[in-house]
Length: 151
Image (tube, rainbow, N blue to C red; front, side):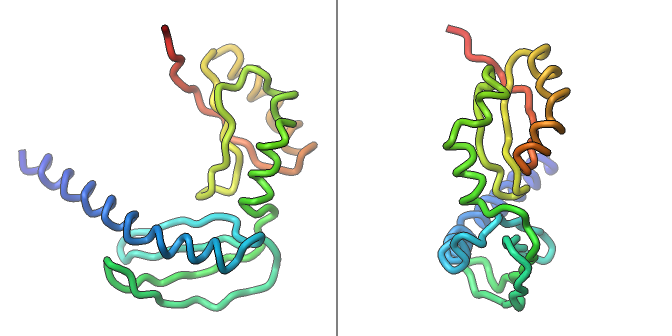
């Protein structure tokens, strides 16, 4: 019972942190625009690492939030910004390689495109083509098996 309570407390804390960091993340997206390549939130102590497209360095900073001070570090060198990846997804070019994908979206934390597939055989076939498509389109792809919706 105590572990359930601790688990609920952790979930509530993580939810509060995500809510408190949302405006900070929005500010980073606004400030860096086409350079913004995603972010990773780290715990203990609470930190945000912002990935940026391009080589130009940006100094770290400490920002006050509703959950306290958060150190924000910047990691330049990302190949693509989130905007770049969103354009690739919107172009539907990936559908020519993976027509039976259930969903295709941008994973901002990892700087990649996630593709969901229901059928296990299709998933394995797509994974076999993954490196070729990644090389051809100069992107990172991650496949996940997703649950199908039955009507």
